[in-house]
Length: 143
Image 1 (cartoon, helix red, strand yellow):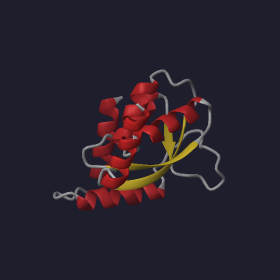
Image 2 (tube, rainbow, N blue to C red):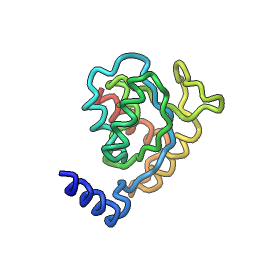
Image 3 (cartoon, rainbow, N blue to C red):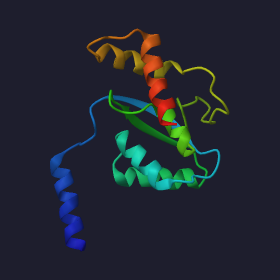
Image 4 (spheres, helix red, strand yellow):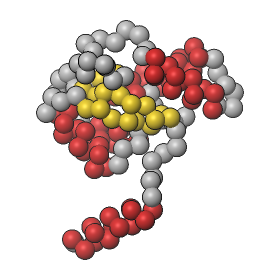
């Protein structure tokens, strides 16, 4: 078993980075309450570009009531980061004072920049408002 795991680790190193292509966004994640479906949260984090080990580490730290800085990848196929709320996790841009915000009412500037980059990469190039609606619609449909 140990040899198989070592070979698997070597194969990963040789294969290079397998993260999805998309827009990386630095976020701070935290769980204001209990995480009721940790396996679903791990799966969701993997869809945003974390490998399985990183996703488990993030979930463990969130369960311990830590805020976690993570770089998640936004792809045209992925859900919105706001969909993590249905799994008990809040996501926001890193705060300068490292204190998680208590309730975001506006979209942070770096998230807007990432949305703009995403929308400009689309063949139909939606306006910023249309792109935000698309992303929110995906997040709300998943909630």
